[in-house]
Length: 318
Image (cartoon, rainbow, N blue to C red):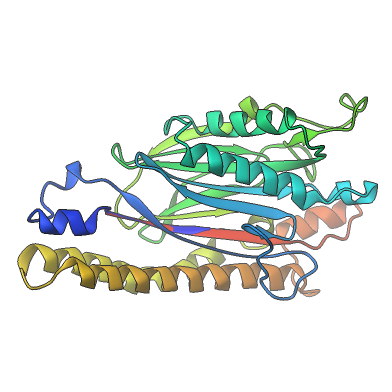
């Protein structure tokens, strides 16, 4: 998922007479997502926001914008369990909690914990495991609060450089931290971590920051320099954002409807970039001549691995 940070309440602010006092304005995210499943040569969005065994969500509340990605553990397929069911249900539950306002922006671990325990108490049988990453933008404080369990993760990019990122959590090679629901009697056999074990952080964001959230299929196949090359394509759209607010402040005939069209343009640009990054990561995963760091580690451990990827891109705006 890609998001770009900007300011919210454009129409209201314009009508009230200006966009002064930068520190008092709420921040929001323009977001887009794209992905591939292991079995697809095209980006196919399943029911909900699911790509293969990956799932994601974008939810907005009056206090915050919240995004999440989860990667269902594929090994459950060997036991007749669809891995996507667990990750998709977890993300849908977290999304609902946010929309109902049952969360604190500074505590994304609380969202993950509440969502997971709802799954444990669900009367409908559900088995599976998943990694998870949740990113929360507190609109008023301009702080990004995150939690990451396992090997999905996020990057914050500013000025063409990575200024903040998640830390991967692995028990050992190719065995990330994960939330699980095991069959009755197998609770001690199936690997399962507590949501409270998620790595959490807080970070001050700025307008135009790019927040990329993705499953391991991206980070396993594309090093930072490749990702940053793709994100450079968003520079023009960021200039559009700056021009929009400058014109609204200095020209009474330039109204918020123009800004709406600019935001639409920015969404299209973000979506195209998310598609480009996801496609490149997917193609590299299947390229027999490309040796990614993960592929090298897999070969060292006697494995032949191919992957799937979900990418969410966000830009901070006002």
